[in-house]
Amino acid sequence: MAQTLVPTVQCQMGILSNSIQSRTSLNNKSWNSLLLNSQRPKAKKYSSSFKVFAVQSENGTVSRLEGLLNLDTKPFTDKIIAEYIWIGGTGIDVRSKSRTISKPVEHPSELPKWNYDGSSTGQAPGEDSEVILYPQAIFKDPFRGGNNILVICDAYTPSGEPIPTNKRHRAAQIFGDQKVIDEVPWFGIEQEYTLLQKDVKWPLGWPVGGYPGPQGPYYCAAGADKSFGRDISDAHYKACLYAGINISGTNGEVMPGQWEYQVGPSVGIDAADHIWCSRYILERITEQAGVVLSLDPKPIEGDWNGAGCHTNYSTKSMREDGGYEVIKKAILNLSLRHKDHISAYGEGNERRLTGKHETASIDSFSWGVANRGCSIRVGRDTEKQGKGYLEDRRPASNMDPYVVTGLLAETTILYEPTLESEALAAKKLQLQV
Image 1 (cartoon, one colour):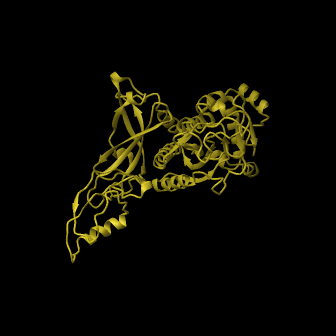
Image 2 (cartoon, one colour):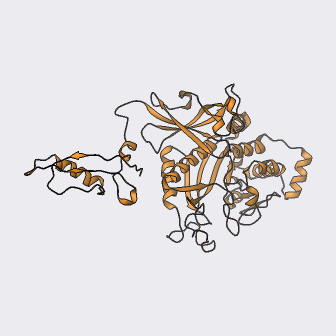
Image 3 (tube, helix red, strand yellow):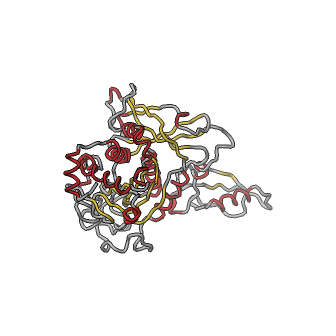
């Protein structure tokens, strides 16, 4: 609940009691009752002045902002608020700002382009700082409600060239290729994250400067000594559903203070748009909760699990009868471009992909059925049914979903290796394709 300290209000009111002290703590119910009582005729009248404060929440306060934040503007205006969201200069931070739109919209093409100061986000020099935002996807705003919207944008120079951190542009080209369109690529992305205590940047639920008991009791657990941050996870889940994000589940993770949610199955570039919007919503919720969100792939060194963004992937051919052979061919292609994928799968991923804690080594490519220690995992059901999907377990929690989804589609659908390299890779991986 937002709070503020307001100037002293001097009021002359006829009341039967003694003067109310300036530091009296009032809740909304007692405040309204006091005002109503003051308007009733009294048997005896005399003047009494008092002061009203909105103080910090721990003292039991009257919120001065809550009513305004929850105002429903629909009965009074057709105008809406659009929150334009874009990716900042680090390639992982999300930025946003708001503007008024004259009426509700249903498609991003109805929204105007906008601009921002790229020199303040590390995306443009000061002498030529204007960066242009192109609206690309719309979601309902769970914070403002009504017809207000969140708008996922990508960024361009004034001449229309994508800036270096605009990875959506290249992904859109890949997903716009007719071969890719025909294969209807599905993605299911597992976003892991860690919640940190605000002032000490230490995981939520951990003793400051110390460690909890070893991993084991925390995964999908319940209980005040095992689950830390469930309210944030649940609030995020509902906010994503409200926004129209294709969120499909959530759970507590192996390391205490770490959580995961899943988005998908989503088709093509929608998967990345939904992940970025869900990350923005999570940033806003943790902001309100006074908790720090971390997407670091290895937030705590030592015998603790890292944070990944496992990406489940399939094409139309993989999902049809005989699809298991298509999956094996895709694995072959992925092995040949392992270094290209690793270099684009998230900063600091070498601290996570060590061969321990349910990861494969960053230096080598591997695959297996039901093996969480491999680069690519194939599920038992997929093997049994002869069709299905694969899971790329290499992406870090801070990966750019535009890059990862685009690369998977490019490598498995558009990339055509030589017959010689295919044969060598198949022999190494013991794949019969």
